[in-house]
Amino acid sequence: QPGRMWCHARMVYLPMGYLYGHRYVYRQAETDSVIASLRKELYPKYDNYNNIPWTKTRHWIAETDNYSPIPWVMKTLQNALARYEEWSIFQPFKQYVRQRGLEFCFEYMVAEDLQTNFIDIGPVNKVLNMISHFHATGGDLKHEKIVNHMMRAQDYLWIAEDGMKMQGYNGSQCWDTSFCIQALYEAQLLDEFPELTKKAWSYLERTQILSTKVSQGSPAYKYEANEYRLKYYRHISEGGWPFSTSAHGWPISDCTSEGLKATLCLLKTKTIQEALKDANDETSEEEDYDDVGVNDAGSILPISNERMYKAVNVLLTYQNEDGGWATYENNRGWGWYEQLNPSEVFGDIMIDYSYVECSMAVLTALVDFAELYPDHRREDIQHSIDKGRAFLKSIQRSDGSWYGSWACCFCYGIWFGVEGLVKCGEPLDSPSITKACDFLLRQQRPNGGWGEDFTSCYDKDYAQEGMKAYGDDGSGVVNTSWALMALSMAKCPDVDAVRRGVKYLMKRQLPSGDWPQEGISG
Image (cartoon, rainbow, N blue to C red):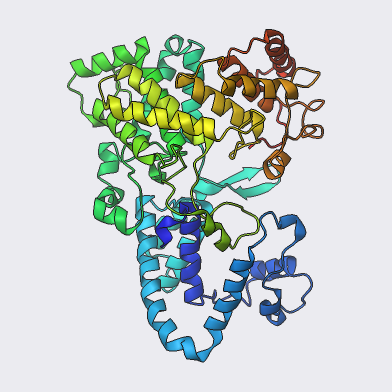
């Protein structure tokens, strides 16, 4: 059942299945110079692309790319399916079920396109969906769906120093904005910059998924109905916040949480309270507000309590049976699904897992929400927090660390683990907190900083010398920041260690106020 797969895997293999099932080949493949150059680059051992023995080379993989070796179960199934495709005895059955499957594949892609305003969940299925529509429309570049797809291709493109690149997402706008707002709130700067604060509020107001008049008037809103969510395996979307833009349409547990926390921070400011009061005293319509959601009088569009409640409902329904939270959906499958992973370069992609990062984000959002809205679903929220707190403690490693899955790696994971537990009421002298602090203190380098790189992720062990090549004498500003946030939240009694870490960051700051770009951290 495809709905039990992780949504990113599901949405990528959907158009791949469609294109393979139709045996789609670009009409000008043999004469197109770009394709010819790609074939030469990718298959340098063969002068003639058509002479490549695909059956014999099916399982070839460069050792440097073999991060997640294909399990023998999947290799066996691939070999069996190759015979299924070729042997004539299977053809009548194959043609019958394939036609039905291809019809559903295309119908499913149409739904995904409309729910995401032709952005799609990521760049791979965006391109493959577009090619699938190109096939279905007979190569009509003026067809409405092709035009809509082509207009959204630029959402993923950016120009770097060495040429054009394709991003792994259509941006991180909402994610970045949410953290900026929270940082400004903690620095007590929001009321000093009222125009910034009102624009940030209006951005979050219009970015909340399927929550504005505009988004509820779009084709995407139709798919929020139960019958369509069940048919296309979608979780509740209305009320969530995205990683990037509202148009993207996929809410995520931690993005919804950070968006909610940022909104709650803004709601506590004098600037927003006065702007909302002014809005209540006026009779302005939505069209009276400018592109950033502020009218001539300086008032803003409100975010109703009902919209806040829907955001919390999204978070509560995301919680898994183990007490943690995954990314886009609940954990719907089982561990053995990984035996069917066909990708060597990605591990653990077949189902959605509970993560320390997502779990901390949701828990802290629920705690913050409960402080401002103590009467809304009090028992449900407290029960969810208790389960989540137990989950965080259950996945802490024996050395006191947490494994971070979305960045490098243990400094990052510990920050989430510690902050999540402390916000949920864990005593600062509990074994979970003291063990985490001890782990970080053991990793602090002589210059006061912390450093690890991506090798921590695949070795699943702290990379002691990870930033030797990429940072400053083995330390990095990002790892150090994560470690300091964890130690500060835990009120670590070793104040000298914290002070040395802060001095390291101060030393590394550039005249512009920024910090240097170092090795990849996430």
